[in-house]
Length: 246
Ligand SMILES: [Zn+2]
Image (cartoon, rainbow, N blue to C red):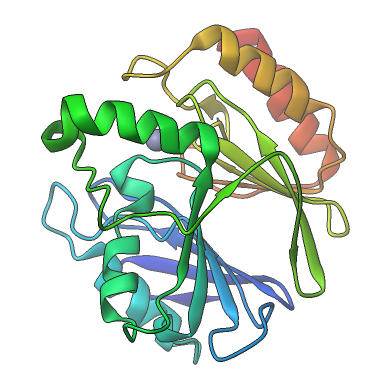
């Protein structure tokens, strides 16, 4: 475990690190799959987070520092997987692509549904949501099914509700579930923002609750914590969520 003022970093498996946001303002947790891609940029990041948040905290700069404290370099990120298109999850993708050499920027991925949503919302609310489509142009779109990152095979699960194209990533071999803003420790993502749907969230939660999960990695902490570890705790979390939220 490594701490900085802004991030608590944790090695979760040999190939997966969690960077848990500790700042005052809003930002998400980031997850880094290390040495999974072939070529010069072997790391894949899930939700790189904000660039700078509402308290002017330099979120991405601090994430880079937290990574470097573990000898992990942001320039070695070859793939950016976004659970959804809210700026506190995906805005730092802009910096990652700008800092990269022009010939080899990292690939940026969203679900096809989320990309549609970004295009619609982007035209209407570009300023309000801070989305810049040109800077976050996805080089490929993710659909439901297997995503092979070297020896790590993830399942992409479309879990709309918080946004129309939110996705979760399930790693069956390690029984790890990365949930973005769909499920938190003792809570769920809000559905009152543009594109949110409580009935879709209910269906998505029902689907996720069926998975065999030993470790749930959410997009934000709550008063209860970030990581939910242990099959029983994960199950109880889904039960509590169904009782109180959806
Ligand atoms: Zn969100």
